[in-house]
Image 1: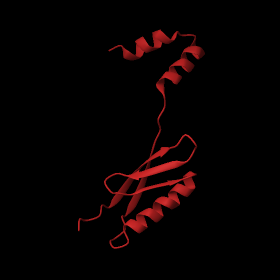
Image 2: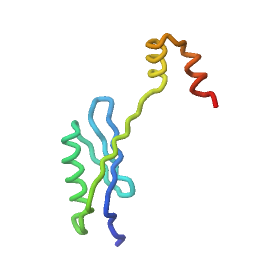
Image 3: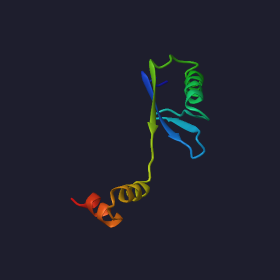
Length: 95
């Protein structure tokens, strides 16, 4: 039996419908919930179930991954600042 890590880290993604999905890095644990508070409870329960025959980790970290579409941001900035879209893209890709 391999030793359990002292800390488990979960990557958390927010669904388009507003719910959350948490997937543990390095262990086979995945859970989901409708709210952040429910997700915290669900992760604790999933970790407890996964660790039923071994010591619990000392800590569990939830790492929220935020995914933004840069194109939408460019459009917003260009409208707000009065800068044309092509100019912003050129500035971003310039080395």
